[in-house]
Length: 440
Ligand SMILES: *Cc1c(COP(=O)(O)O)cnc(C)c1O
Image 1 (cartoon, rainbow, N blue to C red):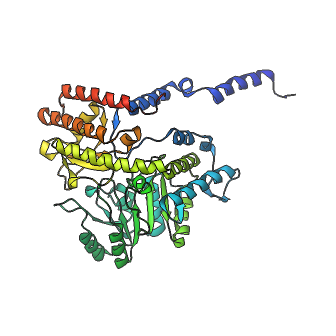
Image 2 (image 1 turned 90 degrees about the horizontal axis):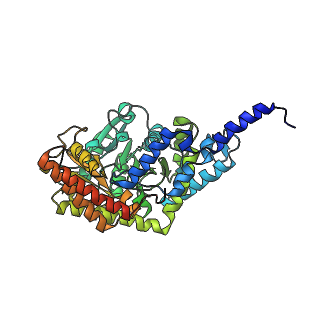
Image 3 (image 1 turned 60 degrees about the vertical axis):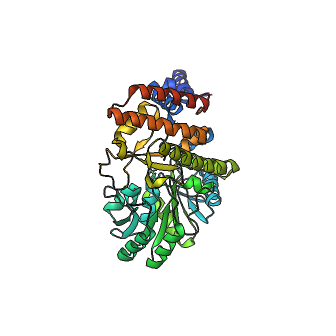
């Protein structure tokens, strides 16, 4: 028989019924409403942000699972907490699948984000003040590759390489010359807004010549690498980092991959306890799910479709009078130069959003406008390809984008309301034919 007073049990039962069973809509209508609105936004607009994607129902379920409750500091088999049996199961699955997917010997699946995976590599491989080399932000590099406002630029000594003014491609002779001059301890290849193939073998030769560690941050293209639609950074690169939520289509997170045993201890120690505490086990579970999806044969077809769609979108934009930086794309993304239309990236982003086409303003190489205004937009096909768009749909999307930009070119930042209304209607038709999370 229970020793608690009957009224106390009553109150407890009533409260716990809510605690265990109330759905979000009744527990917290304000947050529930924002989530419902976000779902509708994703359903009703076409997502063209190159760093975004649409995760599967299974990935979402794992992310929202009871692993959110679990502390599991340490690594599988060597934890600082009890009760880690099943945490070990999902983390081991994630590690084994990551290794299989990218064909490498070691993986750390604990970084909470892309920025933290790169911080961990810096912590493991460099001392404060050390020189490293990365792609210039203005040429499509990432903040964590040496931007002066980022820790990578504040605590280390970044030197950068960029694209050349003529063809807007990375000039490997210039990369080699910069490396010889500055003798960086670490060289990073990979970026956020570079739409051509990376020559990893050429970077390897340069790294060997100057005695640098070669890091590839393949965050943007890792889904293409996994699906065989872009060459792999292995075996050329010593360490490879990637976010898991971009073309790879998993939860928001990062991983670190490598082949040589000598990096195992420093990299694992840098992630935990160097930078992080308890790993996000629910996100690690979701990473395992995403890696399984990426190992399936369908993912190869997806990755190839992403690239085919990007080529179709770039061709359509060019046909409709817009200039693509470097003259095209080999991957999932492209930069559109709006200079000739006298339209800013800022105005284009806003005008396209009014027409239900979501993208981001982005500086173009040698941009004369500030990063808050810019002369370009960046577009990508991973999310649209996930919802089922093929080259036909992306050819239409290119035409719709050009219509909105031409409206902005004629009328200034307020655009052409009639054109935007008409584009919104046609976007609605495409979205209805290829629904996102149907039934939700
Ligand atoms: C997106 C990205 C990152 C950072 O990822 P976050 O999860 O946003 O911190 C790092 N490097 C590259 C190349 C990226 O594209």
